[in-house]
Amino acid sequence: MLCNDAALFREEMLKGYVAAFPSYVIEVPGGVVSACEATVGKVAVMNGGGSGHYPAFCGIVGDGLMDGCVVGNVFTSPSTEEALGVASCLDTSSGLLIVGGNYAGDKMNFDMARDRLRAQGVDARTFYITDDVSSAPVAQASLRRGNVGTFLVFKAVGAAAAGGLPLDEVERIAIKANDRTRTMSIGLRGCTLPGHSEPLFRVPTGMMEVGQGIHGESGVAEQPVASAREIASMLVERVLAEAPGDTRRLAAVLDGLGSTKYEELFVVWATVSRLFEDAGYELIEPVVGEVVTSLDMEGIALSVQYLDEELERLWCAPCSSPGFSRRPQAVLSGQRRRVVENRPSGSVEERRPCACLASRRQGQVAARALSSMAACMAAEEERLAQIDSMCGDGDHGRGMVKGSSVAAEAAREAVERQAGVGSVLCDAGDGWRAAAGGTSGALWGVALRTVGETLGDEGQEVNAELMAEALGEAARAMMELGGARLGDKTMLDALIPFRDKLSAAAASGKSLQCAWAEAVPVARQAAQDTNRLTAKIGRARPQAARGVGTPDAGAVSLALCLEASGLDDCS
Image (cartoon, rainbow, N blue to C red; front, side):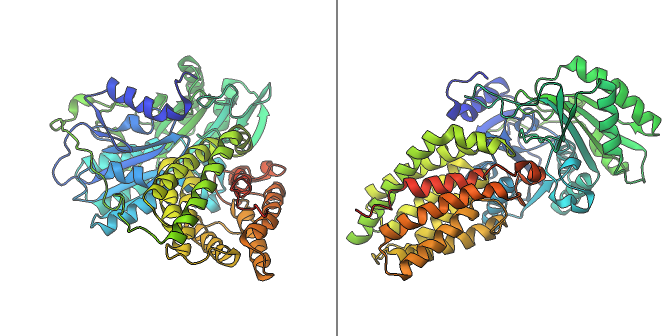
């Protein structure tokens, strides 16, 4: 994949995108917003997610669609601060609806942004799309992930807001559109992340992945490659299996995932359209092409929305954007606007008084530990990506490198300001969360901030007992934020045993360094032992059985960071 610096792929992509479509979009902190002024009183609608899916998500910012898009790193959810950056550049006086796929990182970061906006007086709401029928049974539909059907929901929400509906009604449309949208997909070849020479996952020769996700997650099954007619039949059968029975009218999207040629899509569509008609359905303005891609993945996704009169009107409503337009001449754009870069309230650096000497020295130790962790993550990036690609999206190594490096820099700057250990760790956590995004970024951010708040800047001795208490508080904060528990195959499965061992060593009178040295092997073994667990949360959950035998990438990286911190020096 062409790039200059893989670490800056998102930033350079956005600059090129804005340069290509200056009449449509303006770059703002965290993403892009529409270049046209919104109608007075219009509800603001904003989508977001990891990049790598063009034209979703930023490609559908425009008239009749999204007002803004928050853009994360490749296959990684944007951070809370990035979401706030985009929201601050929109007119949210009539309310704001943030719409994303049902992924843990998106939900954590967008919900935190929503709550901070509410604290500022904005009526902000979030909604998450669950269209992928292969990722959970119908009885657990709320656990399903977002797939190509996100586009159908975005279209309905954007048209509803453009039509002047109030926020309650726009939110109702989102719920209704999602409830009536279904997606099924197959993959023929894995995608390749920027800076990598090998695909994120490999499909065995002569086989196809059934039900893979849009972030490169492996499918739920492998089957021999079938003919276009057989693939079409399988896709149609699956999306019709949950038909509501109150309509015979369909919006349909047959989507290429990045490398499937249009001619191939047309071959498949010939059968798909006939099968729908044979089943008694009328297709309303179907779309055959690319609306949600996965970099250069080869495969096909079929999405349908079961239309009633209201949803059909929204599906057919005019819109105009770089990635998708429908009767754009019918859209009356407002005046082009100039967006001033606004920093969301609460993001301005706090000016803290200098801490006492003892706390400043502890802060220096914390900063050195974070620097060592960042160096370790840079060295382990490829291995972590490979582990994560087994059942995830392969972005964990890149996210850990980006988050830890920014955290280390934030800690260094805090030390230069003569900050105490609590402030050093809080700044590091905020930097990690803002830079890395994703699930791990949000969790590391809240963990470091919680440890920092527990230790404080008052100069109290940071011994093994206090550190065990701080890590226990961090684990509780992470469980509250992410919803995971011990045994769910997450980073908590390494952190909690580490904390328990640290606490036991503290009770026996061990120093922090010696207690840490005893606890590191426990974390390392606990991380490895996650290979026996099945994932119960996050992107790995749909492929839980296939992940047995592979450890959790988050648990492995956490154990590596604990070991690399240098806090186990008993000499």
